[in-house]
Each structure stands twice: as structure tokens, then as C-alpha cells.
Image (cartoon, rainbow, N blue to C red):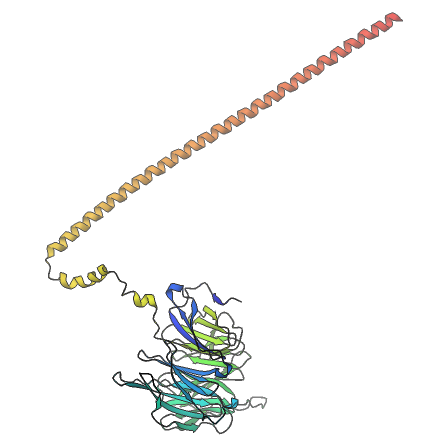
Length: 484
């Protein structure tokens, strides 16, 4: 299987994607215009260790001091620089005396996008974590700009979002005021992050026509709009996608099935009307959530379960990754595969760095010739010049155009003469060919005449011989008769 595959397409636009895998490795893939839009791995951060498997990730890609938060299987939450991968802070979510249980891993992580003033000597960040058992924590950390130990601004705030069951999905809205949680045996519920109180809980659908009740098992969820937290979509383990509206009712306002395997990833589009869903068999599709109509499946089936889908905030592309170890970049308009990169390990998460700039685009202004830069500045100074200068330029341009027309006429004459010469040459060639044909026909006639003459000579000789034989026979018969 090839490590990098591309289709007949313009290629990926300049972008930068960061992927996370089950061995704790963080890999950076970039697509640049000078590479023909082919995505390639440019950096790898960390060493392979199964105990450091990345379970969740979140990025704050602000232009000043961007941060990347990573939650690992051993219970540690790390804050990294998405530019070079330098470790800023490493925090443990459990006490040193406790052993992190495999049944209470971190399933949700969100890094709040709080802007700090540039004059402050340090920058602060706040992140939210949620475990399988529903233990949710909001924690603030101060990161000094100089190297040193980090300190916590406030004591962590902790509460439990479920009394029973396992939380499998966690999502914070765009305004970072509300969060939703859902999982196996846990109905989707909305919490106010300011007061840490539950404001809404979904109600399970009724039994079907056969009297069978579908157990609650949510695997992924996302908010539909940036401005409205009341509408959200959720995927279930029973290959069903549900749309909820808090202002309408507690049960889903619309639901539909997709294929025959569990829904593993759901993400929203920037328009607020489209969602992208991926399931356990590698199917990826886009759906209009207003009507529940399937807009289409993305061409090229993945060979493994899809675990993460991310929409680029500016470019019309999405990225998907999963258990087939491929990072794939798709075009959302044509739903075609733009590029795929093999990353060796099972992938768990992918995020985009929206502030990435291509070297050629960024350096185009810097590499501009000085003459062009002077031309851009000249119009301000030319306003004070006299109009005759402009007239002279026009005359020169006219003379240049006349010279160009003359050159065009001369070139056309040369072309005509060449064409006539070519025609004469072709006539001569046809004449010579005709002469050759005539000579060949004459030679054939002469050969035929020679053959005819030879045959005539042979026939005459045979006649003469036959006459001589007859005369000899007659003489012999006469002599015999005399002797008798």
C-alpha cells in the first residue's frame, strides 16, 4: 500500500494539520504550494509509549502565544506550543498516590480561548476535562514567559455530570458558556459552565412498533451553530443520528439511520446547516440537518474506523483520521480525496492550525523586485509633474506600437514566402515521384519484352530441332528400304 496517495486534482491548499496516535506521538503534516499540494509529514514530537496514548486534544490557535492541550492515558494533561512542540506545562489530574484506572480515562478536553494582554509578564489558560465516570474539572494555569514552574491561579472546580453510566462524548459551545455530555447509559445533558448547574436533559425516544426499547448509547455530539447553543446533533452506537432542539422538546426533533455500524465522529460545518459523520466501517458523508437528507458520501472509502473529523475554519476542506493510520484531506464541495498520508500508528485525533502561512505566499511581498516597489510609490510623486511628460510617453507608446505592427507585417511576409517555398518543394517532390513511377513502368515494359523475345527464340529453336529430327528419320527409313 503506498504511503502517500493523490488523485488528479489541484491538490491541497496550503494547510497544517496536527495528528495524535495511540503511542503518544504527535505528528505535524503540511501541504505547501511548491510541493504541488501534497501533504507530507514534517515533524514528530515525543517518543512512542503506549501509556502516553493521546485520548483527547484541543488547540487555541491564536496569533499570539498559541497553545495545544493534550490529555494522555496516564492521566496527565500537557500544554504544548503548536509551533515547535515545546512542553510548557504538565499537570496530573490525579494525586500521586492514586493509580489511574483504565475505566476512568479522560474522554473530553477543551482549552478555553481567553485573550491576555501583551503587557502582562505571563499568560494564563483555562481548560476543562471530563472523565469516563463523569468527573468534570475546570482548571486555570499561569504560564510564565520565562522558563520556570507553572502555578495554578485558582483551585480546580470539580463536579459530577452523571450518577451512573459512562461518559463518551463532551463538547463545549463556541461562546464557551455551555457544555454537553453524553455516553453509554447517559442521556445528553447541557450544563452552564458559569454556575456549574444542569439546565437541560434529553428524554429517550419511545419504544418502536415492535415494543423494543433502544438503550441510550451516545458516541459523539456537536453544537450546530456558533451563536445558538440550543441546537445540537448527536451520533449513537445504533448507527443513528439525532437532532435536538432545547427550545422545542426534550426528545429529538429528527433522527435518521446511516449505514449499519456505530457513528464514531460528528462535526459541524461553518454554515450551521451541514454536519459530517463518520462510522466504524470507514464511511464518511455530509448531511443537511434541516431536512435529514444525505448530501453525498465522500469518494474513496476508508479502510478503518473513523475516529476524528475536523473542519478547517477558513478553507473548504475537512480532515479525517482513524484506525487505518491515514490522515485524509477532503474537499467538501466535490467530496473528493485531495491527499492521504500514512502515519504508521492508529490515529485518535486531528486538529488544524488555522494561522499557518505558506512560505511562498508570505515571502511574495518580500521578494518583490525593487523596480516594482518603486512603481507603486511613483504615482504620489507624479502628481506634481507637468503633463508634457505624459504626452511624450504616449508618443513613445504609439511609435512602439507602429514598430510592432511593422515587425508583425514583416514576419507575416516571411511566413508567406516560407509557405510558398514549401509548396514549390512539395510540387517538385510530386514531379520527381511521378518520374520515378514512369521509369519504373518503362523498366517493367522492357523486362516484359525481353521475356517475350527469349520465349520466341526458345520456340523457334524447338521448331528447328523438330524439323531436323524428322528429316533424319526419313533418311534412315529410305536407307533401310534400299538394303532390303
